[in-house]
Length: 422
Image (tube, rainbow, N blue to C red):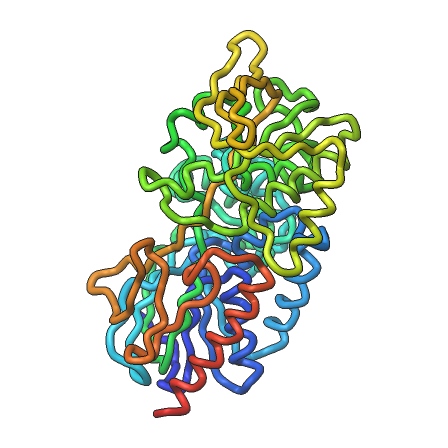
């Protein structure tokens, strides 16, 4: 076990998505030492997987790159990828932390030449694209990855395939002898910004996700529309690669249902409307139908809703779809339900269906748990009587990118105040 020198004047940020990056930078630029840990091999979190933000529909990479530049230029921020906190003990002002580092098998000598991937023959499902395509077991997580460094999948680390990748590297960047390690920290406060996971749509059996290829989720749609996604930015039917002409969005896919995900994530409606704009831009003749219970488009986002409504090719139907079945010959999907405004029964066929799944917070999973509070759904609650650990972004509530940035700034200030009180 090794030690990274920190003191109770330092701040630990757990999670390297937009919330964690924001919290870390705000604290560091205020003059505090920050250690940021991220379990993935890159920073950026879910934002890095987006095609566009709403409502302006601009790409996320420019915003992330600005933050990465700030991070490179600030010596007060130290970050560790493929890292997870395994234990937290102590109290506000005096936390003892143990961090576990998983082996990347690629060191800082990596130039991203790609020679290791060229000779690698073994493939795995691409986690960045939610398994919609394959990637080599020697891979760059994505083309804008930060840090820009390859990863060797542990499944080949001790095999001839791994040795072949190592031999192909001209710079000595691949070290297959790297082992899992741990290191200890002392910090004064913690920002929990571990982000969220998409709800597992396969739990809602009557929608056929995982059984019918042309039923996808909203996060998969985001990757499909991205230029560095599994289809090079072209939205195509997964079953046969054909262009789509008639697409349905099913809102609240498992959400607002006590049998699955009891709460509303709030932003799924807007995400589906954003995806409708992706389709309409690529396919001017494509028909889009959005089946919804209630539309959530609050404050400034109401204008975005109004804009999408004005598109004559986008139809909104108030309905909770009851069942989805597949035509085995064509791969088309039959949706059944009831129009709750008219009482009419719905039986409509579509090329592809996109399920709007909710956001599930990444909880603190360690034994013993630190002294924090969660609500019934697993979101972290701020309790002034239990100061020292502060949630930021989607671990506190489902929210959009801009709100996550604001929330992370507030969490950073609270973390600084914890240190100042000591």
